[in-house]
Length: 430
Image (cartoon, rainbow, N blue to C red):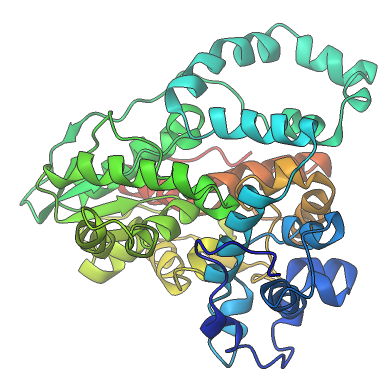
């Protein structure tokens, strides 16, 4: 008897595409860390195959190999056979979500994450207690006394990754273009980014406006569903995708601009996510075709706003869902290269994940910490003034890892550097 039910199991045609050549091994973060075959894409596909044929059930050990996968998609560009591993891991995680009985503690923790992180309204309510915790000295006391060490590793990771709470910089519903209008674009606001990294959205709107775009950012837009999609929470992700389409369909925008790599990857896959829904399938295809990362759009259409010098050494960190899932590597580098006096430097092992990966650093904190430290050591050796990246999760993960090494180098979104250059604002890199 197969371990999977009939609702979107890993597709046999995709499983059979894998010829087990091993080209994926060196690109897989967990294989690089542990050197274990079953913690590689090839090994995980083998486990999927066994479960499909009924030769293996969902044991705790079997499930653990999929829980430790970051879903970073580094294996996909490395695969000579073109295996769509992203489709396979999402299908497998959907099966695990429906069919595997996790412990009560793990179910409760995951339920907490999914009830909070995709909900901007609930994240907004957390701002006050988080600010109180940080500004009253309570955080310093908790860390100094060792109370954190008594908590589970996942809760320690959550505390370590907590962003600094500052006054939010809200993005208006409409930002008019500067100069001649080139087009009308929609802007994804996100969830964690909207509430805790709001300067990134504000900078994105300013850059787009400076480049001649009218920017529409509906505040009623929901979470895009990326965290849920990548974790196998299919039903909840579908509901959010439908709401997102509903919000933007009547806005008259020609493009949906995204500044979060994981979100962009998920939204470009809405056609597959909603393929079974006759009311949304075609609408999802049309919506997905409009989605562009902000760096992708700017390179496709060309830039026209004057750039002022930024005399900084900038290390660019590739977000996995930008470089692997969306194939966007050259565009951010090209945009940074347009800034006068900016010295762009490359980080070793650029294809290897930093350990953020959606909720990965909250549910697999040990592995995430190892990967974060590995990335942080590479960055620290370069001694840059600033680290640039294209995803909020990477930004928080790198900040935390660098702080742990006592190398608190500023980490910024690529678009914040573009914004500073266009406005002629000197950044305090230290």
